[in-house]
Structures are given as structure tokens and as C-alpha cells.
Image (tube, rainbow, N blue to C red):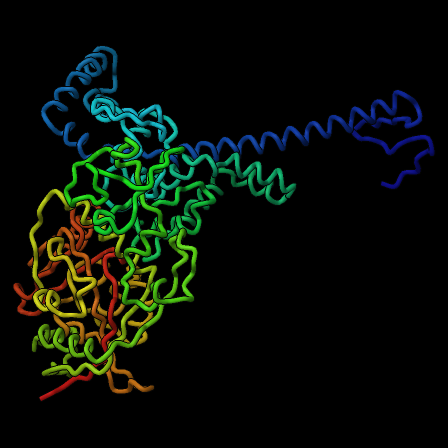
Length: 602
């Protein structure tokens, strides 16, 4: 309704059918207007605070559920499954069952006591059987055997589990210790982003409060609104993005080489240390120094019994120079890179003046090139193909395709991919370290005998003691170049041939089997040729199977969550065809040579 208001009156405020007129010139009218404005602002603020409180409470609960990672160690699970664990379980469950029978009316006492006491027994075993972390942290210089046995230190395998059970802030001086914190069971893979979230929080440089401080310092209203709306869910998304960035091969598991690759370029943001923490055969041979990482220590190399070289099974625990334990000594990344790169490579810093001078960061070496090999190398690769050829037909070759009687090598390119080689070296060092004290069954391939005598393998001859082989992998020429540049991708496994042994990279000791998946080149200077790859493969602990119809899921579980490193499917025994070696981690295979050849038929 249009009403003609007097000049001295404000608009009428209707409430309950009554009309209230306020004089804006009088003191009481101005006070009433002020109280109305204050009441409106208070209502608006209370509503906003309530909404923000609900969002934060929901995000905090979500955050607490997200960060928990309290899986027991295998030793703890074995104790719980033993008769001593059963006895402890019964002792704790008896009073619970008795109390339930006397006072409970739901008649579910046995089920209730089982669920209540199961977690109690697990927590008790974890606390009793787990050592406490050393209170001195990285400054500990004790040489007493009793102290090292009683307290867990950063270089011990159970350090990450000790911090989780007994509390405290973890301290690391190598990337290996950071990864062990994410992998307390020492499986070799991390299958869940939860430990990664805990590791990022343990650095105290990336938390929800840090995000809040960044948003406050930027004076960005959009960042504040995004932080209040999503809260810890935004932190969860960032952890998921980092996890996907780490998982370069797409097998849903993060390995130590993948973690080192990511930390080399992003580790400074989170305060990660630079040393990798893997000694390797080169370090034990004295090819690069192992300086002490304790703050203030001037020791430049670990010295045991007056020697700078460490034997393969060295039992030395303390440095003769500084007195600190061997676990506090770690090589710098630059020294390791110079030592493990093959000297024959054109990308080696000693042979290439254009190579980057900065060797500190792992990701600094991301160069890749294919170098044509000489005639001597071509003739030696021809010997490998002749020794591994087998005139056997399988259905993967095609119903209308015949098996070649031989192969003529035309050209060989050596793959010089520094990043892929360093990741392979790290994976090999981990496997060798795990198998150092326990001999494993050795499996010989068609190429095993010949590669031990060829001159082209003098500098980097494979180690048969840990099942390191040279195997073949078939692909198109473009696919081979892509694999040489970006490694094997487990996410693409089985896209063209199938997955008999699960989603992994399939290799064979016979070039005939690899030739089944090679495609003829139809254009360019290599028209009419085919291409396969000669790969260096780290087998380690082999999961052997000769089943006609294997359980692919169980085999993958044995490797990714068990003690094995690869699968050897003996189709030659059960079907009379070829052996197939399957790996589920890209860093276990390095495509070293691209072989261009011509098929020969009788």
C-alpha cells in the first residue's frame, strides 16, 4: 500500500498487525534504531558462526578418521595368533563375559566380549612389544649396545611404528627413513594415502593451521571461504593429489623409487632431507663417501676397523672416526648419481659437457636419448636373439600368422634415460639389501649364460645371485620409444593382450614370444622392420607358478603385499610354450636396448 508518511516519521514497522512509528529526531528513536541494527547484526553473526562451527566440526571429525593408521606389525599378529596371545585374550575376555552374563539382557555377551577385547589385546601387544623412540632424536651419540637395543632410533626399521604407538615427533635425516615411516611393516610398497598424510603432518610444515596462516597473510576472501567450506577435506584432496603425482606407473601402490623421484623436486617444501639413505654395492665398495649426518659432526666418511670400504656382510655398527652409528651416515645424492651411472653413457657428466652441474636433486637428471650402437654391439645382440629364439606358435601371434625361423638384427639403439636408470638402481639396492642375509632360489633364463660372457655387459653385468636377468618385451616401434622415455605404465597393462597374471609388465626370456606383440614399421627409414626391447629386469624373490589357470589376484597380493618381487609363470612346463615374467613395479625393469630386426622365413 502506498502511504503518505509525515516528514518527521520513519517508515512504519508492521508487527502483529500493529503499527509502530519512530521519530528519527528524538533520542529514543535513534536509540531504538541503533538497537535494531545491532540485533540484526548479532543475528547474522550468530548464524554465520553456527554454520562455520558445524563445518569445522564436520571437517575435524573427518580429519580424525582420515589420519588414523594403526595396523599391527607381522610380529604382533603372529604373537596374537600364538597360544600366548590366545591366553592373554582369554584373561581379558573372562571379566567382560562375566559382567555381561550378570548384568546384560541382550544375550550377545560372547560377540560383545570378542569385539571389545580384540582391540584391547592388539593395543596391549603393540605397546608391550614395541620399543620407545629415543628421546635424544638425531643428536643421540650413544655407543652402548643396551641403549641401542632398548630404544628405537631413526635408522631402525621399527622407528615409524614406535612413534605411532608411543607418540612423539619423528625426526628423519634420509628419504629412506621417511619412506619407512609410511611403510612400518617393511613391505616395500605403500598402498594407502593415510601414511603419506601422517608423514606430511610429522614434518610440521604442512598442516591445516599452515593453510590458515597462508590464507590470512594473503588477505584473500576467496581462500578464507574455501578454507571454511572445505576445511580438512581440502587437505584430504591435496594429499590425494600428491599421492596421484607420486604413483607414476599407475599401479595404485607407491614404491621407494617413486617417492624419491617426487621428494627430489618437492621435498624442500615439506622439509624432507636430501640424502637418499641407500648404501648399495657402490657405497660398500667405497665408490662414494658416506658422511655423518649428525649436526656439528665433521666426519666425511664412515670408517670401520680402519677401512673406508664396507664388506658385503659387514657387521660394523660404529664409525671409528666420529663414533656415531652407521645408520647416521648417508651419501649425498650427487655422489651417488656420479657413481651409479654407466661411464659409457654419453649423458654421463664426465662425457657430456652440457650435463647439469647441480647433482643434488634427483629430478635434475631428466634427460633421455637413444644412442645408436656400433657393429660389435649389433653382432652380440644377434647372438642373444639366436640363443633365445624358439619356434613355437601361440594364439597371441594370430591364427593366420606363422612363426619366423630366425631374426636378422639391423639396428640397435641404447636407451640412456637417467631418471629411469636411477630408479632401477634404487629398486635393485632395496631388493639386494633385503636378500643379503637369506639365500634365494635362482632361476636361469635362455639369455643367462650368454650375458655373463658378452663384452657389451662388462661394465654392468647382471647379478645372478639375486635373479637379475636380460629379458625381451614386444611392442610397436612408437610404443617402444615411449616406454624407453617414460618407463612401463602398469595402468596400461593388458590393454592389448590380456592379464593372465594380473595387471603388470610382461616379459619373456625368448625373443620369439616378444616378437608376437611387435608391429611392422610401415614408413620411414625403418620400413619393413620390427622392434622389440631388451630389458634389464630385477627378479629378486620369485613367486613361481606352473598352474594352467592361475589366480591372478592372489599372485598380485603375494607380490605387492607379501615377500615376493615378481611372478614367474612357467607356461613352458604346463603348456609347452614360453616362460613369462611379470613385474608390478616399473622400476624393476629398465628398457636398455631397442632392437630393430627383420623376420626370416624358410
